[in-house]
Amino acid sequence: MGRLLQIVEESLAVTHLAELDLKLADPEWSALRTHQWMHDNGFDAAPLDEPELHRVVVADTLRPNSSPVREQARPIDSTLLVSADLSLADGIARLASRPFYFVLQRDQLRGIVTRADLQRPAVAMILFSMILASESAMSVVIDRRLGDAWIEQLRAADRESVDQIFKARVRTNTEVTRLECLMLNQRLDLLAACPGALADLGFSSRKDFKKWKERLRGLRDTLAHGGGLLHAEPDPLHAIGLFEAVRSFADRVWGVA
Image (cartoon, rainbow, N blue to C red; front, side, top):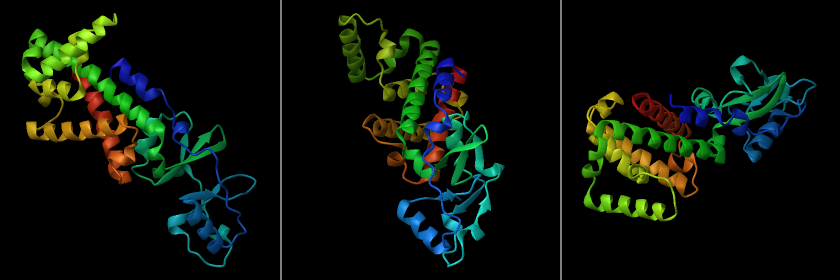
């Protein structure tokens, strides 16, 4: 993995994804009252307000009746806990197999993470950074596999665009190469032109790569205009899949760079 990508993946922890203001359910409340309280506040789960936070009630499985809600609580066991030093990226991956989990710092519950947290700015930030990291790796691949001939692979309009950006940056005394003036879509087009690159990256065909190119461009545009992951992919499980696909792509590009 490229050092740049490693920095991106390790820069934020799961605590940047979590809701740190834990809301607790009174164990003596009726299950009906608790169910309504959770529904009104959009809570997926809530620990019971006990001397030690070791039990939780889950909205999806809560039966709303007059019995004390403590009777329906389940233990907060290891399947529902992650360490506070887990990376944000790995924290997102955990949501694929469970709708929520708690963050444990030392021996205390620090917060809760649910799939709704995929819309947090920290997720958009790390996603955008992963895309930028993959662009840096693409530039390395393009330079190594196409050499100076890469410019000839671009359409005339793209060559002119790159030249204009390069000249503008030179005027401001920016140390930059023309290769660094490429846009994402141009890098992706050049990546497809690199001998053997698509096969090395695991794409079975150009059609397969084209689908990924459009998906990646759409995500980048959404993020660049202030949107979040769930704006690009509203279904949480599909959104997690998209996040993992971007992460995997960046890792693979750095692997062949």
